[in-house]
Length: 598
Image 1 (cartoon, rainbow, N blue to C red):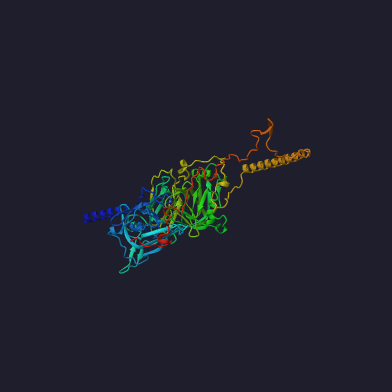
Image 2 (cartoon, helix red, strand yellow):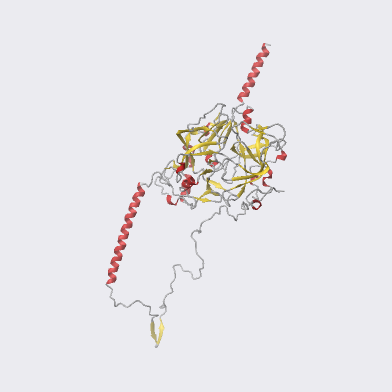
């Protein structure tokens, strides 16, 4: 009996040890492909349903996962090409675990406005319904994930044109560990999240996650751990702040343009005050929300004007976005030099502390592609809005953030650039964790080989930097005119004064000389051709006729004109109404819900 008790204790201890050791952060798998009409963006890979349909999804939303169904492309009015096929579409008829009937909560197979992330600057309409389904994370299968299934849908940009949906979004939790739904008949049911399911089933140590979405363009891989985070993705200052009903808010104090090293096309290495320029109501700060579901940086119009006044970009009202002027000499200088857009926040939710996240302009040189535009077009992912202010995926390329749902806190810090070695150092977030740690690595060093510092005497033409005529204002430099500029202005003014004095003297001398000319000089007239006598007959000397007057380079047969604005240049039509791709726009003849294809 004593032996049995001893072995029983050993067995129980072994089971406990195995159980405890299994509670490690779960690494999500990132797709080898890239996605988006406005990226490129990373997405994670999951396998949905009893048939293990492989899907790519943007991670990061709260509460509800949005899955695109195979019927999305049945109606070709919005687009003749099915862009959703690239990330994958789900067919519920092929899954024995699909439950599309139990939840008694809208939507009920009807059209509605979906809250596609925090920002509503680009609206989303969908024909959808609620469902529960299993999700395989690549070895761990979660059950009863809370979904909204989208049968058909589209997004509408500020100019009114519509474009298809192409990638679903994966919820990474909520303040509650699950959602309880009433049912049409019978007891209520619980919908789960992938983060809560792996925690409740002792796969991960806590109900939490840590993520850096990275950048496909620069080879920065995505990093997402459930129940933990990669410590090597956390650089510099770390700020901790409370969660608010599933959103991740933080107070922003300013936006600035900076140059880390070398010369600056702006004549200054630090241009501050851009957030509140021309809008004093923002001078004390404003609340923004971090959201990996939305792609852009969504700011007030006045803030966008202040930022873009310093950049060679043009605003396009049909998309509500800015495209880079690639013909401007400052374009390449900006995106290849150590220049950045800096966001300064309140640190740790304490008004006396602050910290800054720097986003290199290299990461803000993204690409619009069909069907948003006719041809691939470099653009600045900044969108003016009068709705919620959001820092989306464009910002999160350069930032790490983590969420601890149980403790109701979230974390934000600088993330590394492409020169990082990306050796993983995975750390668990324990159930009681309220702070995280990073590395002492230099952020600047993770970009060193990708930047070329400009000469200290670089001659950037700030007056011609911005090419936008519809939404930009002049920039604000913190240093004013340089000493060299002041000397140049002084020399120029002196030369101009000397030239004016010389011209006045010349006119005065000329008038005095003309006054000495005799008044008897006959007026200059044309007396006709010169004549000579030959045999008593007057003859006209060849070449003595009065010449016909022409402009220089005159061509008597030329009937057109030359426009130097188009010579040797290629024009790009952004969102042309004449486009055959994505321009049919008006589904069913109106901007709104349309009938399902039969």
